[in-house]
Amino acid sequence: MTSKTKNSVYGIVINGAVLIAWLISLIFLFTIELKSTSLFFIILGMLWQTWLYTGLFIVAHDAMHGRVYPHNRMMNNLLGRLALTLYAFFSFSFLQEKHWDHHRYPASSKDPDYNDGVHTSFLGWYFKFMRSYMGWAQIVGMAIAFNILLHLLKISVGNLIIFWIVPAFASTFQLFYFGTYLPHRETSQGFKDKHRARSNEYPVWLSLLTCFHFGYHWEHHAFPNLAWWQLPARRKALVE
Image: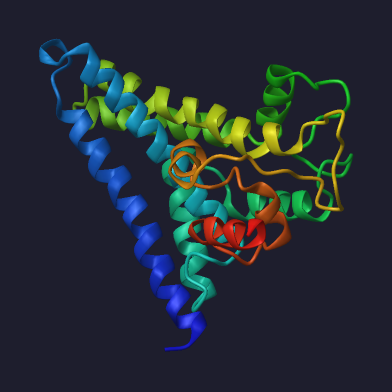
């Protein structure tokens, strides 16, 4: 088995597991009766689904790098489009173009993810970041999906808000904080090289929990051909 084929097998299995886990979890959480469920379980379910939403976007991100299914670009991009559609009806082509600009011009005026020197605070930068990606397509798509789930599939409003809307929204904070703000914010130490990125010092389990290893961000910029699940090994090798 060639390296490319091996990575394709791992990529489809690992990323497919994230997609399936998100779908199964969402279906299950849609079926629970909120009135008869403990607050602890409701909060746990909401946090769990937020984490899976973050994973859903990471799957799409890896597809932008051709790492979900390296053996077949068409299948790779199809899975990326599926992940972004399930996430919030985002355009795969649009986000892919923007993301590669981020890699070409990290933390500069040409970087679409970077602050403009004015919106440097966390919230200011976050809202600028979201405005550059959110549009009517996402709003209309989510509204249509909401009404289909509510009126045709008879999912309760409470379940939709708690386990679908809130986790999707919360995951944007998680992705932005660990994948953009912390790695690319200006500090007194500056950046060490052209990648203009830094990585967190979290252990592997916490790195996975916070943002599917996207916090190992310098490694991602230095080795963009690596899948998200390969970043811990690369970081460990570099540190040692």
